[in-house]
Image 1: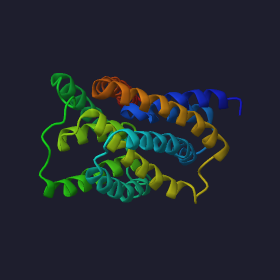
Image 2: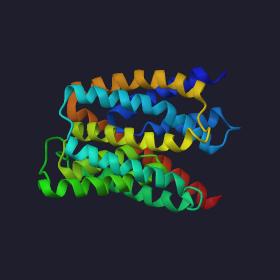
Image 3: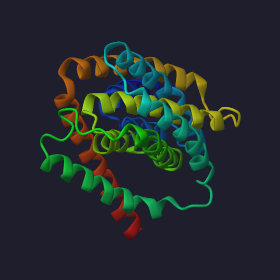
Image 4: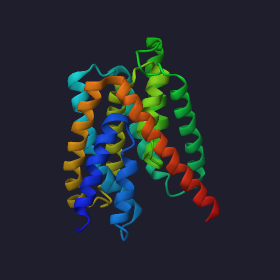
Length: 256
């Protein structure tokens, strides 16, 4: 309980980052692991999802009020992501995460380099997919990233934004809004697994949720006010930090 004010501060920052470009789990999950050393990993992840779903929901609601969310992309992706996020959570027990970390590191480097080399990437609406191909691609993207979010998690929001920009031709702002809908779905899927199993510390989760909502409120307002350029730079900053974290974790696991 003495760590609760510090956890609230981390939840505030995580909500802000999540609302703009994804990646709030990079802040909130390590904070919970440090504050709850005696708890299982499942309880830490369950408490994190119990807090973050409120901030994600608030950001999604604010985006939906101000801009036209591409529902033809977001809804099929969210439905697919819900199913595969639950499947991803169920595979944690038998698939070692150390296998995934180097692959995620390489993918994040590609994402950042590509975004830096193409300054106009995601700044304006790009070439859209043919209407008959949108649903199939949305289901595929939702399945892949939903599974990843349920199984591993860090960087899922950033990957979603990159996929929505690169595949569907959305600008960064609309891609971020679509990612919030999918993130809301994956969080709900994870909680449908964690809550019945008793892996959510509700006093901590709800306290953090209040601050997560506050951070999401500020992040969504700034994103809507400053547009795709602002989202792009926050996206690059978060992705760069993720690369640093995954690089450190990968080297640590090799020399351990």
